Image (cartoon, rainbow over all chains, first blue to last red; front, side, top):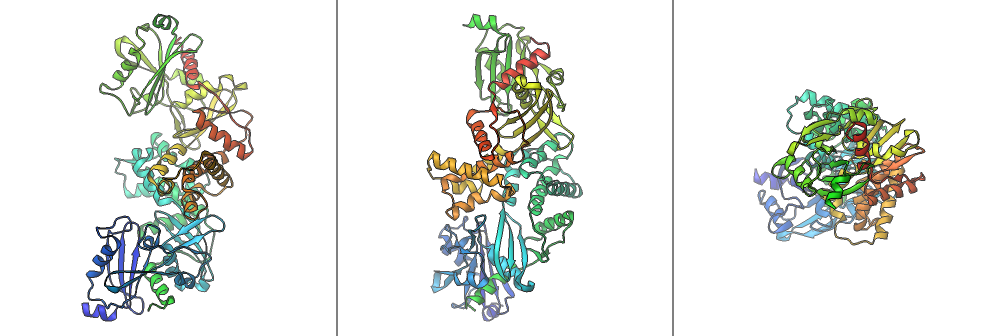
Length: 306
Length: 306
């Protein structure tokens, strides 16, 4: 198996974020032959730093050919990363992004290539790093390169793509707000210690989505996750699902109607957004799997690394 | 002095919140003769609990007459308080609130009277506890009992008063969000370690207010406090003031225009809201001082305690 992997490998693709590192060996068609992950994100490095995390992950696959190209995306290219890959300004095509790939020397004479992030300097200032690769992967099959791509997460992104170019995007602090409010706030306190059924929790999510879609400012609605529990309008175990619904509904309220809406992320999280789209009376976004590896493969091809 | 205090005292007024306890001795006209405070809020009680915190604070003033009425407002009347004072539903007058005052036995045969909170069950469910007393104090001089009363804080309240009745209110998690985001979020990280001048920070606050007033959803704008720093559009030391401006501007955007707008709270915090009103082109709310003691005095009178 090891011999076959070494023979068929065309690219090592790394998704190197803040809190985790995932590596994929791709074949010449971009299909995944093997994958591994480690907790060695940019902010969770082992002794020995980036090089040690890199060696540790790749050593399981040795012997891989020394000249095998290696391409990484994510926070590894930030100011806190292994090497800084400065933002490319949008509008940006895959070719624009691939031209700005930076190199850093790794162990055993290997070179790590790092994908830059994308910055929006016109309109609302915004940045992404890692999502540009997922978007490039997600739109590979999009007709005329037109799409709205939603990437839910700690910092949810809504990315508008026209003619194969990332033209604009918005970041929402949905995941981070949910996490902060759930762990540290007065909402988290009331929401603890109740074991509501999944069905009851889903109803609370739906109510949250609908209340946010109705248009009140979300910073005003957040407190109602607490006051509804105090007044018996929600069970304690519903508070966090209601909160999740509020935050996702608020994102969706601002979203334009488009013919080609895609979504990239973990299946359970994407399902929440798809459900919220049902409630908003808009078509469900189609979930695109393997967007990161596909994007890295396309960028490697564009950069002449394959 | 002690003799004079005991002779002139007409009411002991307690502002007993989550994180602090303040006590005032008021004369028969409601003027403050003496005040003390302790850190013994409802969630920070000493050994011995409520009774010990109460005895500790009052002991500095002994001998006060045993029959002196004692009236408290705030979280001391919540489910986690000394005794629960169930919410009065709005619309509620001072008389409605005073009729629902509850009693609890304290040391040395004293009785502590506790002001109930107010609940809004029609429209957006909401609750207040402590602010009802401040509002009652603030509107004592309002013509025809008409006012919009803003009470900035951890949970900012905007309270509509008509004909002397609290008819509706909205709670915003402004203070809690600011604290959570400043201490735990990715915005707090970029905002640390820069010593911008006060003038530069005030400019950032103004920009935040104006950006929120322009109407984009605040959960989308929050992330820009980080991306603006990453892109050089804000200095790191401006991020938190920009964030403060966003949150306050978002509150203000939703506020109705009224002839009599009052504000109750710490002078520096009220000044931020007054500045934001300048930027929004609306009249500055008039700050009302001593609203808590005035409210407690009026409620004590209404309850026949004086």
